[in-house]
Structures are given as C-alpha cells and as structure tokens.
Length: 358
Image (cartoon, rainbow, N blue to C red; front, side, top):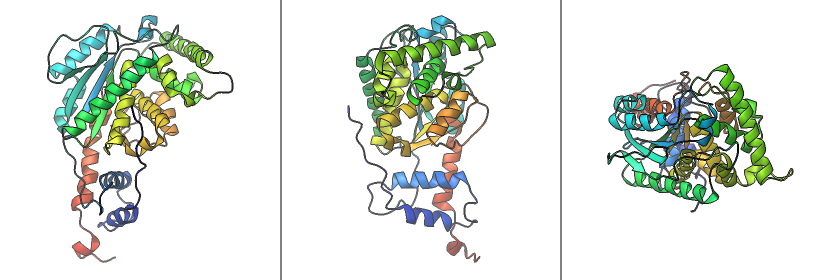
C-alpha cells in the first residue's frame, strides 16, 4: 500500500488570495470562511494550468466506520458492545442523528462493518462489510490486533474511500461507531504524542466519575504496556505508528487512517469529525504529513484529548457546539459552511464588478 503523494502545489497562492481579497468586503472580513475557500480552491487547482475559477462540491459523502473493542469488557463505557450492532442497524434504517443531518444537508451516507461483535445480516445498499475480526482484543492485556490486520485495515479504508471518490464525490467525511472507541483513541494519542494519559482521557459519552477514574488507570497501564512491548527507552513511538495501531487501535480507527490517506492521494478534501476521527487523522499525518493539507476540521468537542490533538495538528475547527456523539455528526453539520465558502468564492462580486470604489 502506497502512502506517496505530493505536497499541495502553491503556485496559485497569489491568484487565489487576490481573488478572495478583491471581493466586496474588507480584507479578512469573512474570517475562517476565507481560509476555507482558499484551501478548497487550492486543492481544486492542483494539476491545472490555471487557477480554479469556481469551487465545485459534488455528492458530499460521509462514511461511518463501525468497530468493537475488547476493552469494553472493563466497563469503561455507558453501554455494552451489543449497542454497536443496534446503532448500525439504526443507521441503516435512517433513524440516527447522522441520518437526520445527512437528510438536512443532502449528504450521502455509507456504513462500514469494520469488525463489530455481532455481524450485520442484511444486504442493505448503504452497508459495506470489511471485517477485520469480531472485535479487537483488550489492549490493556495484549495487542489489540496483529500487524497484518493493521495493514489490511489500512488497505480496506484506502480502497473504500477511493471508490467513493471515483463514484463522483469530491468532498468526503468520516464518522465512527464503536463502544469504548474513545478509550482506543485516548491510548493512541498518549502513546504517539507523549502526552500524559490523563490529558488524553475524557468522559466519552457520559461515564460516571468512578468509570472515568478506572478508564484513566487502564489507559495508563495500556500505554505503558505498549511502550514496554515495542520501544526501548530512547526510541520514538512515532517512528512506527503502525505498530502502535496494532497495540492500541480499533478496527474502525485503522480503516479511517487509510481513508484519510486515500483522500489526499486523490486530491479530495476530507472533513474531520470529533475526537476519534481526529486521532485517526493525526495517525495519518504520521504516515504522511502532507495529508494534513486536505483536512478540514469540523468541530471542537469537549473531550480533553480532542483539545490536545487539535493543537498537535494546528487545527482551527469551524464549530463549537458541545457535541460528543460521533457518527460523523459534526462533520455533516459543517457542510453548510463549506457550501457558503464555495458560494462566496464563486459568485460574490469583486469591487471592480460591482463598481464599488474604496
């Protein structure tokens, strides 16, 4: 599996900036929407002989990756693993929050069984089955998965997102579902960043103070186990992020990492959702830093680990709504802002066109 792709070509930087600055507004008056329009225009100008005169948004699509986690047996979540299966069925029947927001914003949805405890027995057109197992092992005690499963998961995610793009979507976003997946994301972040595990562990979907204390302790133990297993004291875990994924990752997280890499390889912007998706994005940047240029960060959750990983990625999220649901909900809610950025870039008059002199 190749992670090779070029940095964004900045040849059209001046022309895009000038086009935005000449719109009928004071310089910078549209704030982050200007940065967003610049990013989209730059991406869509790649490989072209002239700057993109308009930003096109075709068939925005969210891919919801679902996987179960062995650490759920430790009681670190508000629900048992069977709920993952129940929620996937809810996604497929159109009854979840992500479905509501997709309908409201004309976004296509695809749900992926990456390895949930109870397989989905339906031939629904929105379901893709690419299971890496029933669920990961309890990573407090042993590696979550094998290195071979990591490689297969990266390949699965890459191939799936490539198909979504080739089917006509030029704006993708990723969501996730999996009981205890905030534990996996927190452990990955702590192991790869070197941040204290207490900084990375949050309340998830609303556990009790006792569960939170236990979760912090278990994540700390898991990170120590990972470090002792794969590192000598002088080595940097970031030098082998795939092995850290094997030790602490989730089947859905691994496939999201592959998806982020595929989006960059195919010159497609990807909207990053909340904590788990952002940790997957962070891991993708460790495999190829250039994929960061294709990421649009949707929202800031109240998970303490999310604040930390956003800082590592130097990301400015578009929204801060107190969301902590996952599913890709924050990413889909950011779509209207992306459409607004494209619309002002495409149709807002310049001072010259409007006959406005300042």
